[in-house]
Image (cartoon, rainbow, N blue to C red; front, side, top):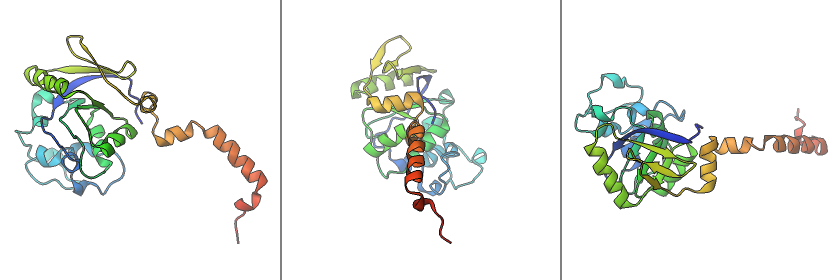
Length: 215
């Protein structure tokens, strides 16, 4: 999992509440569990004018000019600005996979659906909960200022605006540790690999019959 320390980037404003996981990545793309390759189908039903299918050549598909992601001023955005209850609906982990694969590193919103919120941390994305008034103000600033960027300092737990103003945010300290060090569940387990190996060696010596292959 990628480490998250200090990230700066263009902000994309998705001005819609209750964005569910089917909006983020439609159901027909859930067949793969490779965690990669989902970026081109992020927000597929609103991003393109035709129906997307797995393994299609997305470069030839007609784009929806009215969808915010297709506006040239937001190309390459790394921070997603969203409304309340982002990530609601089914618990598909493909949603954070698609956001990450596209290039987003953080999502700012007044609230998130619980399962999506947890899945973000497990996949290297930082979901940041900010007061609704703060989010409202950011939408105004982003939409009125082409090239608007934010800096997110996870260690200091601050979102920094172009004018230097710092917006503090809360984050669970265990999850913060995992993101700063790029540790998913497997990485956390491997931190104790020496102890695990020692236990297995001792167990094998004391109970060799568990490891005897039957004929």
